[in-house]
Image (tube, rainbow, N blue to C red; front, side, top):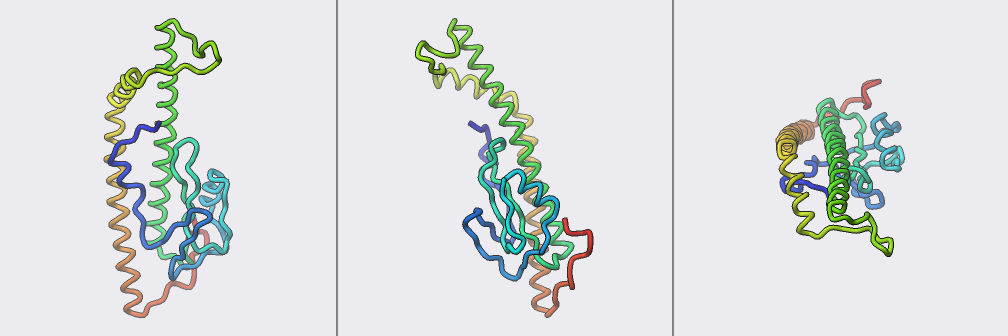
Length: 205
């Protein structure tokens, strides 16, 4: 069980016009083409997901839930001739994904560890072993576990509140930047402007 507040479930990750794909399911993203090279951060994410999209891919890709954080990692598509503002938005979105993954990895580890310790202590108090005579692992009643869940939430209330504040702040910033990118691209189309001739060398990250 992962202890997450309701507000977290409302916002997963705010997205701009770029579409996502669940590895085997693809949705085209208009007007963008994939670079012939993958950036280092893509390689890092591919290592975590065990999946690396083809260099010719034109989509964002979503991997299966991570076994530690239970969040789906994302490998973001980089459009050809990505503008500085688009790059800044992509970096912020990716940084937020990584920050979110790190938080829930640590939180889930702590939760599981403390839950096991609580169950063991309760069994010891009752004079029971970890397993019954048939070799099955003993469990506690829902009422007994409710005591642990409440204690865990109460102990981590400050941590969860800080997480929520940062989560809302990041999503608000991403939303504003998405609006700027949309307005910039709309203006570019209306005025007949074209994208740059290519990405700056050494800036594709």
